[in-house]
Structures are given as C-alpha cells and as structure tokens.
Image 1: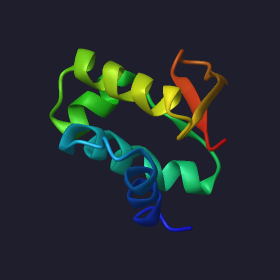
Image 2 (image 1 turned 30 degrees about the vertical axis):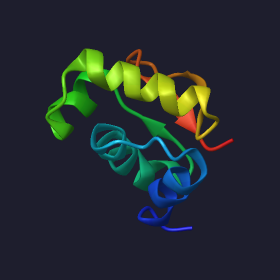
Image 3 (image 1 turned 90 degrees about the horizontal axis):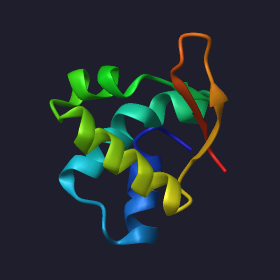
Image 4 (image 1 turned 135 degrees about the vertical axis):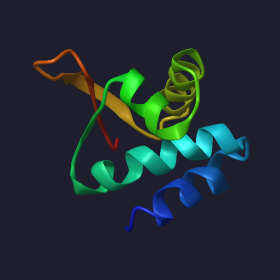
Length: 84
C-alpha cells in the first residue's frame, strides 16, 4: 500500500472524509505505511494549516472509525499511531 492509497481507502470505507480529515490523513499516511506515525498535534496543525483543536477532532475520528490506532506515546509525549 502506498501513502496515496491509504487515505483513499479510508475515504471509500468511511464515506465521511472531508478535506480537513484528508489533510490530516495525507500527512500521517507516509509514516503509517512505514510502520508508525508519531507527531504532536501541534506539528500536524502547523503542516496542514488546521487548528490544533480541529486536528485533534480529526485524529479522534480516524481512531474511532478504525483507520488507525494509538499504540503509545513517544519520549517527547507525541502520540504514536499505527495501522490496525
């Protein structure tokens, strides 16, 4: 699976992937397909142009829909996400 295919697959399964969800998913996808993504919400917000609150909501939606799961936290406190 490529980083481009991952958000597209999520969109096909969930049908409720808006532009901001896609922005967060596209940012996380390359790291997820390599094994794990560990980014602070502030880092994702800075790269996507979304607010931290919006990123938090979109990450929660991806978690609730089973697109990814949290597997812990990095030493700097960043959540670590992996594919289920």
